[in-house]
Length: 379
Ligand SMILES: NC(=O)c1ccc[n+]([C@@H]2O[C@H](COP(=O)([O-])OP(=O)(O)OC[C@H]3O[C@@H](n4cnc5c(N)ncnc54)[C@H](O)[C@@H]3O)[C@@H](O)[C@H]2O)c1
Image (cartoon, rainbow, N blue to C red):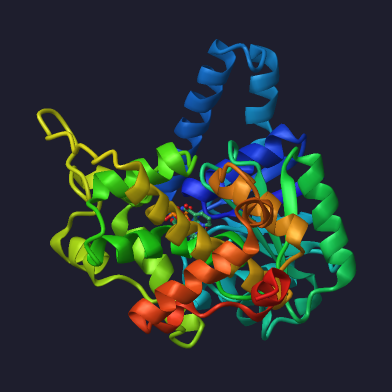
């Protein structure tokens, strides 16, 4: 099958690799020659490393590489049955790519977008065949991360959803279906992991290293929220939070943090700039946590209560099934457990009591309990 990826950046090059590994021929289109060159070199280096590790034979790696054709002419997409758009996050630019593809590709071809924050409906509007537009949201790095959120919009035909589900499986990925709502599943439900940690910091419960220690050592998360924000980049993480918050009409549950905004303004973007919540590089001071288990339990409880509340809210509003929500957070951001299972282990009553207590203490609407969670907790 012939496929096309539009945009040869971080995500597009990874998605092209997935498609080529699945045996498809892939045209990778970018407007910038240097991005195409970079993607080509990256692909070669990736496969050199995979061959060295014994994951592929030299011959198989060569065949995969040969299936990818880098081009600066969008007409090379002609005949593709699937096009995945991964250009920069700009609605007008994405719409104009879709308009061209809509004319160029056969009627039964699927037009997918990898957007993280734009509504799929807004990208499908105005083209002749919006029923074939869908979100296929990969996670970074795409060849490694198993999750793909499949996001139909109002106009998407059910047969397009079914085809995408089958393809995602064929690529060896795990697909979950999400409603076309801000942040889809993962970028919505995971917000409190950062947001609540930032609140705990601002309320001076503990310092950065202690909160990270609590959530990794006691909470079982792979990385602490501050180390993770530094890794993602505070600029990127802040922008995602702000976008989700604005799209939810400024719901306080998603309100961004001034503390993180100041870091962005200062250029303390995290690992990539050598300084974020932590300092990096040679001679950087090592932040030591206060290993107070009682305090850690409060920290973990507050963060988990918010995450579980958010998972219930997404379920309550039909964003996805409980099963898909649990899968998405484990496969998309490596949570050690599904949030519904975790909630039951802690006891939903305890979660609700914790949220009610924080709400009473702070008067902040971000702690309001979702009605489904309260109902299931029986309080
Ligand atoms: N980076 C992530 O972690 C991540 C994760 C999931 C989804 N996304 C989404 O994936 C998309 C791409 O993100 P990225 O991080 O790969 O960006 P990037 O900046 O690395 O790459 C974007 C590429 O698109 C090219 N481009 C821009 N306009 C174009 C056009 N009109 N036609 C063809 N090519 C064009 C650029 O030259 C560049 O090579 C965005 O929608 C982003 O929201 C990103």
